[in-house]
Amino acid sequence: GEDVEQSLFLSVREGDSSVINCTYTDSSSTYLYWYKQEPGAGLQLLTYIFSNMDMKQDQRLTVLLNKKDKHLSLRIADTQTGDSAIYFCAESIRDYKLSFGAGTTVTVRA
Amino acid sequence: DAMVIQNPRYQVTQFGKPVTLSCSQTLNHNVMYWYQQKSSQAPKLLFHYYDKDFNNEADTPDNFQSRRPNTSFCFLDIRSPGLGDAAMYLCATSRGGENTEAFFGQGTRLTVV
Image: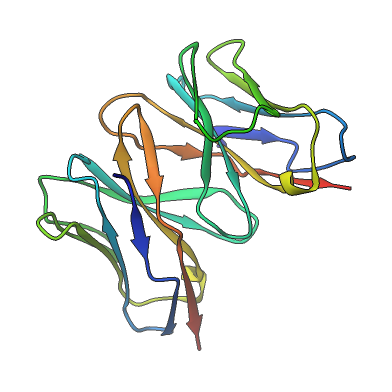
């Protein structure tokens, strides 16, 4: 089946690291994605990881993948107020489609 | 430079009056998608095209139709909008390979009055 789960809310202090967690069910997913959505806007692709990798780093973003546990995480270093948004985890599934989680609302407090 | 462009950004329509939302892309991608998103929920896929091949999701209401006249353009037609159809509608594209890296437009916020 295809089911992606995320915690709904995360509050973090400015300058700290944020860690957003996600679990997925489709073991055949070859790619997993993190998207960011700011209020009233579309989804912006932040990063993705291929399933044969266990880590990917891109500037302040670090993605960790535990394929055995079907667990994906996104770490944002030095979180800024501009990082306040909803973050969606997604997995690639059949027929060129994505299955999205419900999104984690990240609030950055001063 | 905008790569997936949706027009209009905001659309108000009357209950039961047909409305069309449009999407264009400059990426020359094979796949175009339409999603419905309500109240910061996960985007819900309505349908997608691979080139001209149309793929409808099983739970997409018949009230929703789509057209893709060429590679660049895709339209979402809502034949008789109800109050429950008020939502953000997101268009996205992808190349159509193994990596389903999708690029989204800014969305059209639909209000039904």
